[in-house]
Image (cartoon, rainbow over all chains, first blue to last red; front, top):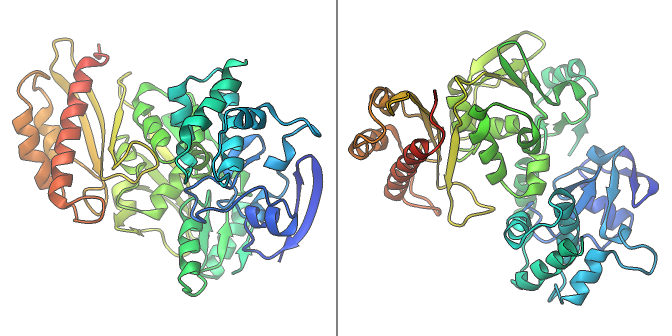
Length: 153
Length: 287
């Protein structure tokens, strides 16, 4: 067993987990933060993207123990009370989802993307979404949503 | 599964000497492979030796004769580092190895230790003549990469050793290197063929230096030594197409697989090498 202590969405969290527990399993199964999804299990689809120390990672590619001491933000941690994060609002405004399975990972990647490329154009957005797959192929409105935030400055 | 998480290299090497473990850095190869094993009910693999707590293995630093890339340096670290033009191709490889999240976790040294024939890091590192530093309780040694990666998923890393760093000599001149990758689509893809090159011209357009390596077309990526030797002194406009067609295919031993046939790979490698030479022509000309 491994003892892990980390910050999740601003709150200090400690847990005893099996060594093999992945960060995504800690978030979903131990902390019941089920907004972070598991799609492929093999680090391809991006449904499990969270921010770790300010950078986007696939939480199925990180052991819970490796996240010890880290500051993790999940989809549950980005809204301000009842006010959605601008990226969540933009996905809603532009219908940037169909089944919604990829949405948490898309939103987390999109926030990181605009942090690194403020005002990103469409080509940059499409390139940077490489690691996030939408099984409904609903990319058009996802890109539109991200552009809305990018152009809002 | 058990996991060890040492906090310094001495402890890590002691654990490595005591038992069979799988060293873990960024995990971008290790975790997907384990998920597949679990899904197919294959027995649990080796215990993990997680190196991520070893701060001494982090970072990219300039040294007297080049650069030291720690075992925990990620592809993102490479992209962000201030490096001379000779590393441009390595940065291109870093951007194409996987999505941003994979670049943030995956490491260059892990890419080498995983020893996939399609590893995108190796072609550039071969032509930069990088050495890998291996440590154990018995010794430290440095190997050129063609002495380290010896086959499909095979390296000369001893069971008690850990790779601790790459040492990359300062590249010649201010000549940009390039990395060209062919996949079945543009992003998130394993290479069908990949070519890395550093080609310098003199003022008159003759080739002064040529270093070219090919990945995914042989069990281990390789330098095209016959082509390199034949290119030196030739004018970049001087009908190099037949030379490429003569020298590139015999240097390769590609396989037929789901991503492409051997014939297709040979042809693709020739096209990428020609494209590389063309880009060297239109790009910056070395003084």
